[in-house]
Each structure stands twice: as structure tokens, then as C-alpha cells.
Length: 310
Image (cartoon, rainbow, N blue to C red; front, side, top):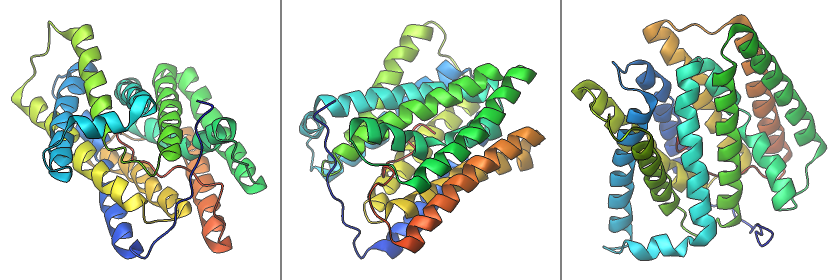
């Protein structure tokens, strides 16, 4: 990955529409945890399979419409790095469902709030982007929040779930850095690669038991086709027209709202230490984003990428 090089991205005048789309997509995606908790009996592999089938179908239609019936060429254009990004995104998607299985929605989403800082760290290593003092300080604050949540998870027996959430964040951050390096290229086909990878792995893991209820099948299709498909397509479009700090702020909507829906509907209450650790992460991201916006800072920027699996 030594040949990865960042390219400048101008912030254009379509910010108003982009902000509306970002708010909409972030709110829509935030219902993923609630859908997971609303499943009747489907296990993570079954959900992964049907959710990815729906995602593959929706993104295929979008690509066919966008490229006037062409399908293979857009996929070839993303190259080997784009395919790698899709695989990383697929791993993140599978780890995300495992995290929701073994720990609370709040734990999972609050840990995912550290994605911008993992991405900044990997961008420093792979893209040679400099880390400002403010970014380093906020990374330390986010690390403190992660430590609180992971240690509590180990103490109460949900360490596996927190570990899967951490794996999700790391894999997605690596995906984000690759997409960032190819931002002038249409990387929508990476979602196809991700969905196909998950479908294959799910078939390997559970090909003999994919039968689910109509209720769970519908929820999986809604999650993959509507939430992960359409919402992330809007997210990709909108993020091309906003500053990095603005994108980061809107990303926080998913991480903050997700636990609220689950708490209100199924009464899954996060623990005190989960809230403390999660708030440290979210506040760190929010403060850093506001400082960047007020100060007018540009590079280094966190990647403008969708939260596809989540």
C-alpha cells in the first residue's frame, strides 16, 4: 500500500443539500441496532447473508442506472485496492453483527465512535499525513473512553462483544483510508465487493441452515437494502461536498441515536461506565470537529466515507 497517495478535495457550494442528505442517512443508519434487537430468531450469519443479498441488489441497480447498463467496467475501475477495501468492509460488517450479539448496542456504537481516530492513525502510517496536536489529544481522549468500555466489558462478561466492535472500527478505518486515497474514483462498487464477500463467507459458515421467518427476512432486507444501501449511497454523495469536520459531526448522529432507539423500544439500558466511556469518545470527536470548523483547518482530514456495514 506504499503507492497510496492522498489527493486534494475541494469543498463545493452544494453544502446545504449535502448536509440534509447526511442528516437523513445518519439517522436512517442509526436504526440498525434496533433492527438487530427486533429479530425473532435469525442468527448473525443468517442476517449477514440476507442483509448482504439485499445490499448487493440495491447497489447493483444503482450502478446499472448510473453507468447506463454497464456493470463490470465500474467494478474493474476500482482496481485491486478497491477490492481490498471491499473485503475490509465485509469483515467490518460481519464483526459488527457479532458485536451486537455479544454486547449492547450502546457499547458497540460508542466504540465505533473512535473510527475517525483510527483512520487518522492509519492515514499517518499509510498516507504520511501529519497529526496535529489537537488530533493527538482527542485520540488520547478517545483511547481513554475505549479503555473504560473494554475493561468494563471484560469485567461483566461482554469482552467478546467489545472486541468485535473494536475489530469493526479498525477494519472500517482501514477501508476508509483506502477509499480516501482514491477519492477521485467512484468507489461505490466497493459495497458490491463487501456484500459478495459476506454472502460467500455466510454460505461457508451456514449453508445448511439459512431458513428464517418472514419477519426476520423482511427486517434483513430492510436493513441491507434501505439502511445500508440507499443511506450509504446518499452518504457517499453528500460527503463529497462537505469539509471533513462536518462529515465527522454528522457521523456522530448514528453513534449517539442508535442506543437511544434501542433504549426507548426494547429497554436495553447502557451501564454507567458505558455511558461515561462513550461520552468521552463522542465528545472527543465533536470537540475536535468543532475546533477544525471554527479554525478553518483542512488537512489532515478524517476520511469521507460511508458507515456501510453499520
